[in-house]
Amino acid sequence: MARKIIALLLSLWGWAMLGLVFHYTYLYYSSPLNPSRDEYWEGVGLAWGVGLVTWIGLPTLMISFRNEFNRTFAILMHIPVVIAFIYLLWYWVPILPHSPTAPNSSPSAAPNLSLNSDPACIAFRSLSTSRFLGSVQRLGAGVAG
Image 1 (cartoon, one colour):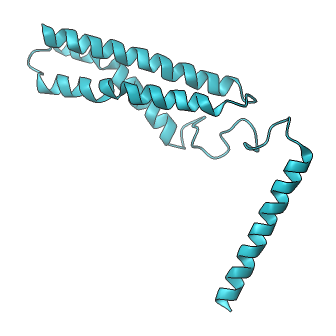
Image 2: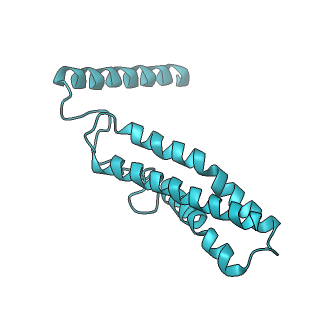
């Protein structure tokens, strides 16, 4: 009975962490011009880190004591683990729609720039980037020649 209570508590903890992960993901995508927007991804990462207790502990507990749990109970307890796995696939596989790791997945075309950026800073960034690329090309030509 104690193992079933532990499994139930781990499953509830997994649901709570999934709630935080989805909350911070929603905040990230709902406010594309927020200057502290990247902190929402940190919230997703922290919720994932704290949820590792469930993502690893619950399947380990269920496999170790599989004779004590009936099939329906085990399936119901694993729902947050399966949802977390699907979310992780969405995050890391750039083929899936709206994945953060997909090319051009950010809402703005230039993620380092905002609508409030100073034109002088934008010109300096593009100028320093072109100077760097030119020096790299000259260095490569000197090595090859």
